[in-house]
Length: 193
Image 1 (cartoon, rainbow, N blue to C red):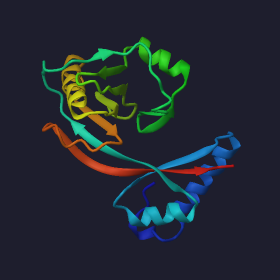
Image 2: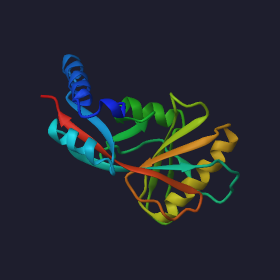
Image 3: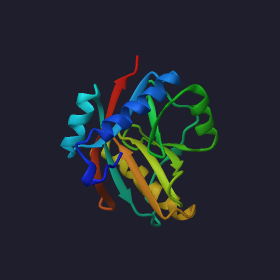
């Protein structure tokens, strides 16, 4: 939600959030979520006043496509989503279930690298809002295996005509020179019942 600076502190954002929550309740949603930049103290105060708690903290990175050959990854044919209950699809946190996992595996949208004995995984999706943009949910378990995934993503983007790559992860990724950290944000959560 973005409110014109001339109209802030008028409870417009709070009213919009409460209206969205009422729609969620009508549709039997169990939780309401919102994303807030970790630096945005005013929005954090608003979320707190509405009963939201920090559920997780995520990082957003930008990565440019380029030809690379230094990667060791494989496409996953099954995935234990108990450890990783959500993935990001066009900036919406989607819970995994057996049907989604099966479809993503069938479409070769889940990749893994296990070069050092620590599996890192990524879920690949197309942006629904930006053309030629690959959105990646990265579950990093080591720098080395994640670095292989990042190199693969750059090459995959070139081969599939993507112009940009957006990576969302709970981990800090400071080990790859092609990554640009854009922002960190809190995934806020509130029970609607």
